[in-house]
Image 1 (cartoon, rainbow, N blue to C red):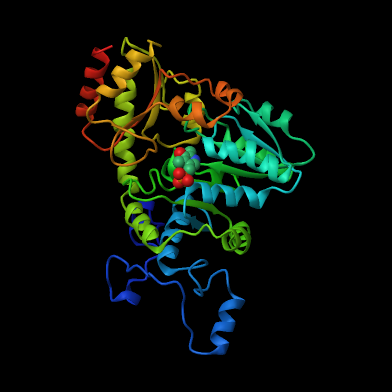
Image 2: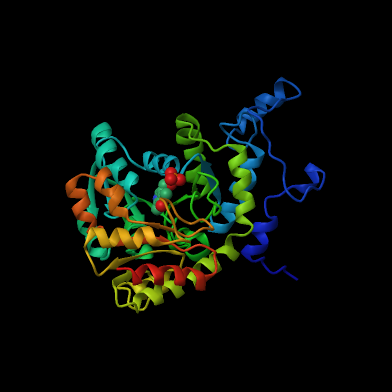
Length: 396
Ligand SMILES: *Cc1c(COP(=O)(O)O)cnc(C)c1O
């Protein structure tokens, strides 16, 4: 009888581990080593012949990193994953792999700020790259933006700023027909709730700093995709740009992956309950969360995601900065800070940093105001979190 395929929770606990090689320890050791030694000339020479898989030098491969990469590839339904020292190191490596000098990129407008700047400022000036930004809500926008020199379509769905979605399967199909590569930043949904590779996307990138790490104690990134593409990225952008992850960070990621599905279920239920509370509150203008029926792209989200994470935003009815600050500063459990996806609940207003990092035109394009508050709903008790928001809203 064919064995039933294991579910992902089980694989995240055991897949990729080789416990017999480390005395049966249930938690793998950290291979804190920069290099690996060999018994003779032929052995090291053979390792170089198979350099995409061999342990030679830790800027390339390391067994601790390997375990986390195997679990991540399995989780996303990809063939290979490569971990990097940050989400931006993963994104820049993936993008550089797909573009060429003087080429053209179609990107969604409301992507993560530094990724936007990578296209808009850095690659434009360094490589004469031209970029067309689209809102991404209609497939026709992509069709119209594509030119003969388009090498790459870059997606972020849901986007971490305004949570707008793209029809992933439709974009992947359009791109494949024209021989254009596709990258999606899947940090918001995590591979637990969205599987872009199965929808035809070439490369999936994540900031592992967010839910995949989940404990706010590491910065890391990952690219996941086919062996064909990832082996090429390994030999070029991974080895030559050198944005590697450390064994310690990888070990923390393996620790985190074992609880990822369980954590995501709590982030999801807590956030949906809070989004509903805010949606019904008289001092709130609008709530942006793809899991709310009132969300513009609710149907599309339901079609391509199997769940929702805990990052959402809402617009206060008041636009008086003094009152906005009173609310913002009054919260006790929600901590003030950037980033998201950790066990702790956070509050932030994107306009604070976007206003400084983006030029006026880019900032205007985001449509954000100071009354747009973003929260990352953590794993605390949801009644306590609602109580915290409720007392803050009473003050304004
Ligand atoms: C944080 C973030 C990144 C960048 O990740 P780092 O680990 O901070 O480099 C990329 N995309 C999204 C959506 C993010 O939220």
